[in-house]
Image 1 (cartoon, rainbow, N blue to C red):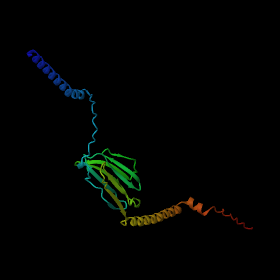
Image 2: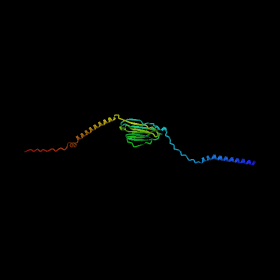
Image 3: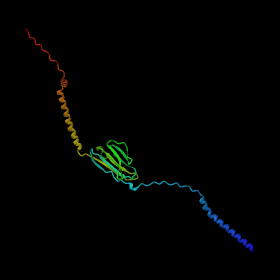
Image 4: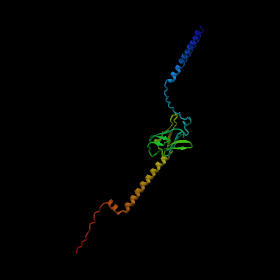
Length: 217
């Protein structure tokens, strides 16, 4: 009897140990499966750096101009030097032209119009210079534009007549009148002094007939 009881206890212990091992295998099986699954490398998503809000502003705004006919007109626009590329566009009688700064690229423009880029005290500047204005330049417009900035300041040119054109016209008329008088006076003096011209104007004259006086004896 005692041997039977001992064997029974041993069998129970073995049975309990087997159950524990099975329980441990069931618990560790999912975790090992998870560890065995391959992990693919994740590709980093490209991040675009947002523009600096402090650089998206205008330090110098283009201002409206009113000039007399013949006077030069200068438009300026300035942004912080940390700002990216910006454009300053000219709309006028000479055509439409864009000045890209700070690279300084500008399309072909007539001699009366000049565009330039520069820097001053931490500021990137773009300048349009109209060397001599005329009535056709009235209403000329410039626009400054920064990338990623909805604001686009603009300015307009007004050209007026200050009366100088009338004085110039009167001077030209008086000068022309005296010029004509001078030409006629010189022509008259040359005509008086030149025998060839006098002969040409008078024409050829018949030779005088020679009269022979015959006296009778």
